[in-house]
Length: 137
Image (tube, rainbow, N blue to C red; front, side, top):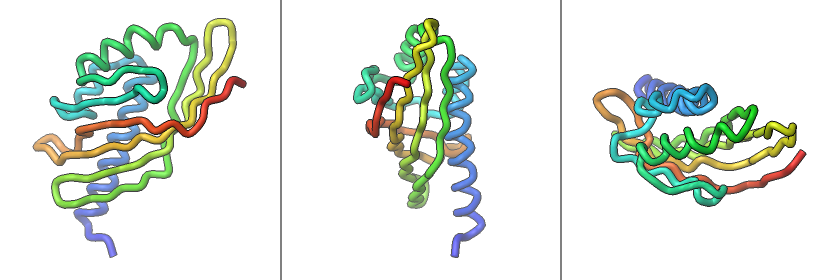
């Protein structure tokens, strides 16, 4: 049976995963400061993106996402493993992206994250994408 602390940690981690999607989908990239640790490393390379620290990732997102007229993230199937003040998660993400000419791509990927419990709550230390599929609709 899960303890109250474990339930709380899982709920907080799920909220941070949602906060990531909300920040990216709304173009509020500075909100990612509340998602990642200050020393985080994010690896988008398997989907054609960059690997970098948080500042590099925020700048890259601000540069590439305006090429799409619409996009969103649907994240679920969270596998959460908590070990004291650290955790690992693997979450499925479905990410449709539409270009101005109405071409639509559907990306299916897994977020593999490591976490640290900070004074401000749970934060992602590393994020690595695993490709599941990509399709043009």
